[in-house]
Length: 135
Image 1 (cartoon, rainbow, N blue to C red):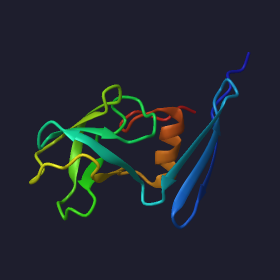
Image 2 (cartoon, rainbow, N blue to C red; image 1 turned 90 degrees about the vertical axis):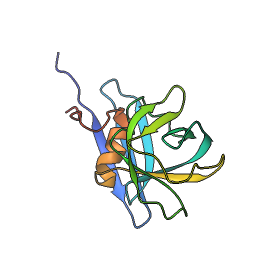
Image 3 (cartoon, rainbow, N blue to C red; image 1 turned 30 degrees about the vertical axis):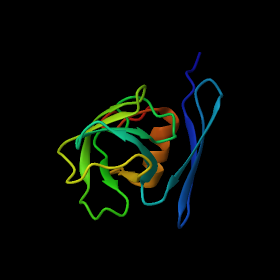
């Protein structure tokens, strides 16, 4: 019996990139990301200047945001790489400290180093950076 592969369709617009995918079992998956390859969310609380609990609202697996650049919107602080991501607790650990500790409710952006269509494909398949995408 021949193994089925993922089927992925992507539409990139000026603001958003939409992705529809059928997994090998025939289940439909959808993702919508900013065409800048950024995911946005809110800070739930800050445990320290390096460890934050966030709500990214995307249902991503643990480790997915590792390697993304993190910044608090409107802070003027340069982006800092996300070193660890625990989806179960919403905790992210940054590679270095922020200059100011964010407040609960602060908006953040996690920027993927990959183009939006690849980010969207990774999201629907649940494959983090550094791991190959399946056929």
